Amino acid sequence: MAKPIFILNGPNLNLLGKREPEIYGHETLDDLKAVCESRAKDCGLAVDFRQSNHEGDLITWIQEARENASGLIVNAGALTHTSVGLLDALLAVPVPSLEVHLSNVFARESFRQHSYISKGVKGVICGLGPKGYELAIEALAAMIGQGGKK
Ligand code: DQA
Image (cartoon, rainbow, N blue to C red; front, side, top):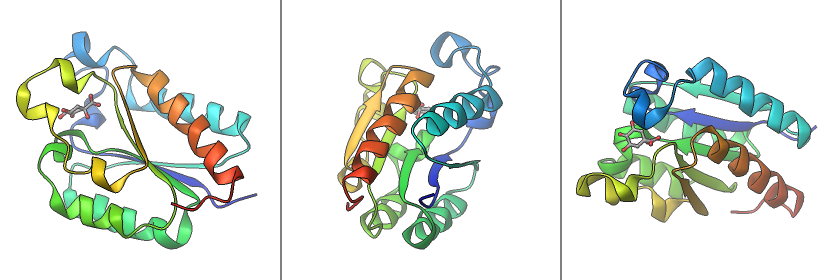
């Protein structure tokens, strides 16, 4: 089997299901993890699913993906809109990476409509809730099947 894909979740996503459910839904992070594992299994991929409230953890994990992952899905939460460090880490990853947001960031406050990290990823999915993660897994599986270069 190929190396796993990393699915990395940033600040406050540990509160999924409790936090602003009208925006982020009622499913918990564990529910989301289960959905991702099942979809990845269908695609023949293993998943390493993580969450941290700390920017440095996410940067370290993205660096780890350089050696240990076949692809990367990142929901950086609020760090999306602030972090050049995450962008630089993503630019240094040789495997395909995708940015995902549960909510439609373009239909929200103006500060959410700019992502620092989009320049470092192959594509962006937003506004589709957990389905967005499933679609990202499918897309990554196709890219990995085609050689998996960035
Ligand atoms: C989010 C959107 C971000 O603007 C926000 O800060 C989050 C979650 C999303 O998944 O919709 O924490 O990344």
